[in-house]
Image 1 (cartoon, rainbow, N blue to C red):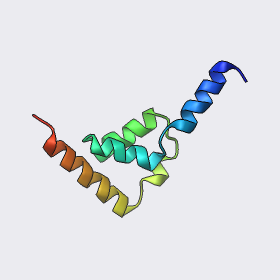
Image 2: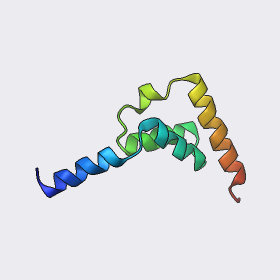
Image 3: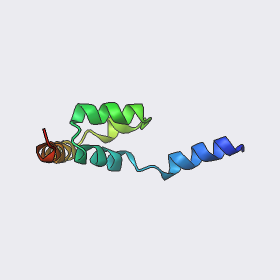
Image 4: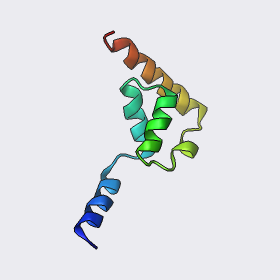
Amino acid sequence: MTELETLNRRSICDRPGTVERAFELARGGKDLKEIRRALASERYDDAQPQLTSPALIAHLRRLAKEAQRQQPD
């Protein structure tokens, strides 16, 4: 394995899981559409099936709204 392959493998293994990353984005004020878009661009290929639970979606929306209220205009 080349050094570049090792670095790529390590970065994929070290990154947060899909749901964890979704929560990070929501805490940053991203809405659900932005979260899904960001996860796709970050190559979280399992994002679509993982973000289907109504309870999870509601929680992400609540976190995003709270974060948006705390952000200065």
